[in-house]
Length: 219
Image (cartoon, rainbow, N blue to C red; front, side):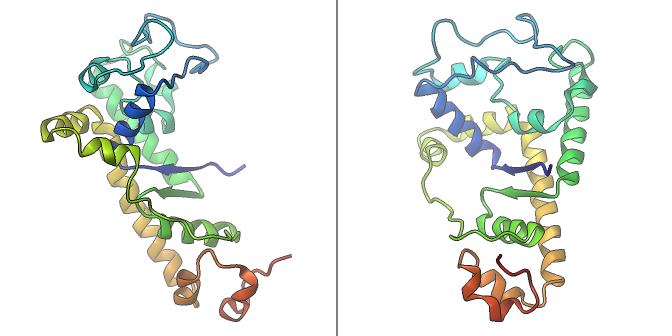
């Protein structure tokens, strides 16, 4: 198995999840297993009562300390057994944060491929070059998303607070952007037909045989 992931700019990702929750989304069926057991109510208290958190205001969404939207990307990439799973009292907060961030960075570095939502073309090129698989259509960056629309409707102070809340994801994203650039430059330097391959992403391989030279052929 190859584990892959796509990361997203943390403020946009957090606001996108906020809008998703406002529309009635929940993760009630998620078990969050760690070391073979789900977290207790004390370890992971719910942020809302009732069926969902529909129409939650942003300040309430941000003020729930057990809201799993906060630093979600770091938490989901990290080995939580290193920090006592969801038991936040197992060690000092700063130590917990640094261990989670270091673990997330290392696991990302070990992945054969990861991409960034803000760098669609580079991400597609790296995927295709890594796995010798070719998409029939090019990846596209949407100019408007639920996250971007939400961002225009909130204050700069709210954006600063979101960045502060998601400080681990901010650091992880900066690391990921640097690592993505490095992988792209390495792959680019070893691709004798880079210009052709990069410009023709998402076009059927049969149209590009001349440009690929001795590259992998479709079966």
